[in-house]
Image (tube, rainbow, N blue to C red; front, side, top):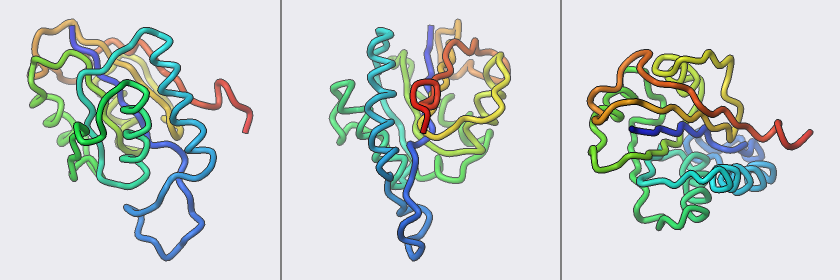
Amino acid sequence: MKKLFLVRHAKSSWDHPDLQDIERPLNKRGKRDAPFMANILKKKGISVDIIYSSPALRAFTTAEIFAKEFGISKKDIIIDKDIYQSSIKYLSKIINNIPDSYNTVMIFGHNPEFTTFANHIGNRSIDIMPTCSIVGIEFELNSWKEVERGKGNTVLFEYPKKYFTD
């Protein structure tokens, strides 16, 4: 069985409008939500074999926070520049090329691509993945190369506003 967790980056800051989009950092709420959401997964007994991330600062910082919670070194996070402003086609290519030695994978990126992709490969319709949300999809497959449209069972959808009111 293969397990994929799509994680949308935590809430980013718009305090510096002169920054390029890819350079936007997390804001206070994002810094609160990321470790909290990582801990929710840990409490569910989820472990992670490998982490992929967009190079955008807000996505990579979210990935670093999750990696720390899971005991994964930040140097082991695979940065894939094409996750930033990606597409179903490219996200599928990333998934299909994951080494089969990894059974549980987390990918950190952006909307609207992540919501579209979760709906493409999973069996549950999600309206939108809010910031720092996590969609977990399981595949009754032996190889990541076999992952394709509708083959996944969407087993988890967590997001901060389930737990916080702000």
